[in-house]
Amino acid sequence: MGLKTHVAVISFDHKVDVFLKGKQVTQATGTYPYRAYLETLLNYGPSAKQSQLTASLFYKDTAGKMDVANPTATAANANLSLKAKYEFSKTSGIIEMAGPIFCDVFFSERLLLSYVDLKVVMNRASNEFCLMASEVDADYRVKLIDANLKLRKVKVNPSVSLAHEVALKKGPAMYPIRRVECKSFIISAGNPSLRKDNVFNGLVPKSVILGLVESAAFNGGLKTNPFNFQHFNMSSLSVSVNGEPIPFKPIQLSFGANPQFIEAFLTQFSGTGKMYYNIGNGISCT
Image 1 (tube, one colour):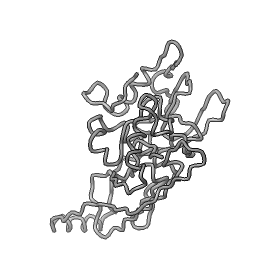
Image 2 (cartoon, helix red, strand yellow; image 1 turned 90 degrees about the vertical axis):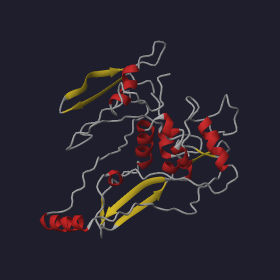
Image 3 (spheres, one colour; image 1 turned 120 degrees about the horizontal axis):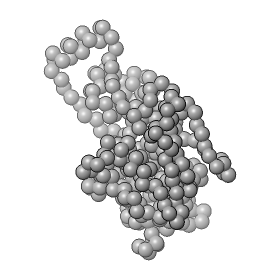
Image 4 (spheres, helix red, strand yellow; image 1 turned 60 degrees about the vertical axis):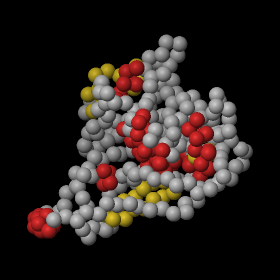
C-alpha cells in the first residue's frame, strides 16, 4: 500500500470550508484536491519540489506509470513517486507531514482584523481516493492522529489599530483576493465532443486550466490515480469569451504517428507568467 498522490497532504481532504464571522467564503464544490494539486504542480519549480515540498510528501510521478499500483515493482516498471511514499507507509506507522491550505483567503496579503472569528472545516476524502494498492479487496485506511493549524499573529502599532477603527465606521473591511474556481464536468462515453456555455458568469478569469481524467479515478479507486491527466486523443480545443475565441483560433492536437501538441504544452507557461523566463515547473514536452 502507498499514498498515491504527488502531494499526500492535499489528497486527504475532499472539501475545505472557511468561514469568517460565520459566513462561508469558500466554494463547496468538492474539488479541493485538484485545485491544490494543480497550483502545486504549475506554480513551483523543480528546486522547491525537490526540497521544501517533500515535507508534504511531494515526489514526482513517473510518466506513463501513474496507474502502476504496486509500490514494490522493479524500478523499470514502477511509479517512483508511489515507491518513495511507500517507504513512509509500509509499516503503518505515523507519518508527519505539513503543507498550506489552498483557499483564497489564506493567500491574501492583508492581515485578518482582530475579533474576526475564523473557522476551518476540513472534510475527509475517501480512503480509495487517498491510497493506492495492487491487492484484490485491500482494506487500507488513513487515520488522522493529530492536526494543527499554524497561523501568524501580528501585534500592530496602536496608531494602526486606531486607523482601522476609524475606517470601519465608514465601511466594511475589504480583502482583495485572487479567486480560484474549480469545476468538474462529465463527458459521456462515446461522445466525440463537449461544449459548455456560461462556464463563468461575471468576472472573466485571468487564466483557465483544463484537464481530463478517467471518471473512475476522479471518484476514487485503489488502483487508479486521480491526478493521471491524459489526452484521450483530443483533436482540438477552443475557448471563447463574449463570442471571441481565445486564442485567435482553436488549438489543434494530434497524438498519432506525427504528434502535434507543442502549442498546447506552452500554454502552461504563458498562462502562468513563466513564458520565456528562466523559470519552469519541471514538466517537459517529452
